[in-house]
Image (tube, rainbow, N blue to C red; front, side, top):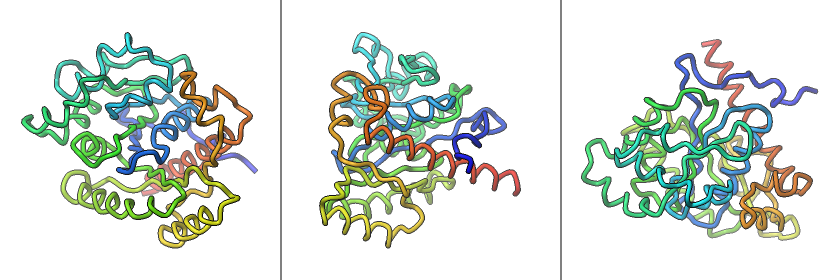
Length: 280
């Protein structure tokens, strides 16, 4: 049986050269957004997809996890959003072929306040990508753990949202707020926005609570939940301190295998959507 990654087309960008844009978002912190962004991007790049990560989190953890030193963040996403630089000027290649990043910077923490007074403040990222982002198959946006203007910019720019959801009870309470936010953004600013999928993270199969949460999420969201789950794994936790995705740090770990499987599912869904578009 062929793998969906093997069947994936050489180019996921549309006829105008616009890449598929996925926002990785959940307003709750510590659920694995950055880890998912970095390792999904690495897995996609490993199978030949051209991937750009945009680090929209002021903490800059995606930039650090991809080995980007602070001296290479002088031009970053803050300057793009504020109009001080074009998007292509902020792109920094990583050590991973086919994978680059627009890093975060310390100034990004002030962007929420500064954006309030700017014209079309919710579309700053969208306009930057439209004008400066040819040559990529996917853009993955690592969102901050909030539903402020930075996340709003990501959702307005994106085609779809991936939601990492920690397999614990309290994580379920917050997802309803995110779903409502996605619906409001879709209605008011971005009619194409959809949920690409929900990925359960930090799953401990030895824990009955993890199984209960997984069962509840699958019952409620159905096919939107990926078959792949991301396990609790020491290697996943260790990798960022080495400035590497877990796929580079330890390819044979359970965490690496899980993210490779997740990438296969994501590409399969994207391929299906692309084929449906051709048929239509």
